[in-house]
Image (cartoon, rainbow, N blue to C red; front, side):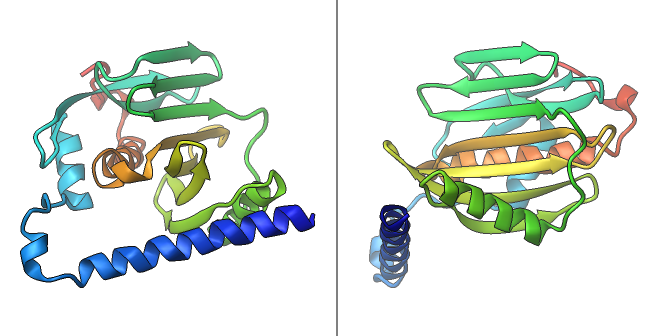
Length: 215
C-alpha cells in the first residue's frame, strides 16, 4: 500500500508540473504564439460532426458515418475508414486505430447501471484507478439529456492518455462507452471524440428512422 501511495503521489506531482509548464507557455510573448495552429472550439467541432465531415486546422480531413448497435439500437457515430482494428459482437463494438492510438468502444453491461450522481461516479472511477495502482485526473464532468460523461487523463507507458467515459441513460440502461486518444492529440482527435459523444446524445433523441445509417 505504501508503494501504491508513493506512485500515486509521483503521478500527481507530474500532473502539477505539466500544468505549470502549460501556464508558463501561455505567458510567453505573442511573437512565440504566432506559429501556433489555431484550435477549434467544441461547438465548431460539433457543427462539423453534424455535417458528416471534419477538417482539422492543420488540414487533415475525416468523413463520418453512423452505425446502429445492440438491442437498444444505439446510433454510434464513427470516423470513416480510420480504424485498423474492428470487433462487432452482440455486446461490444470496438474500433481501434493502432497507428494513431485512438479508439471508440461501446459495451453492453450484464445488468442495468446503478443510479448514482455523476459526482459519485467520478469518485468511483478515481478510486477504482487507484486500486489498480494508477492515477486518473478527472478534468470534466457533464450531464446531458440521454447520457453522462467524464473526461479524465491517465498515464501509460507510451505517454498520457485522454479518455472520455460515458453511460447511456436510454433503453435498457446497460450501454457504456469509452473513447480515448493520446493527450497530445486532445485538441484534434480528443475534441472530435467529445463531439462524437455530444452527437450521440442528440441522435438518441431522434426517431431511429431519421438516422441515416452508414452515412
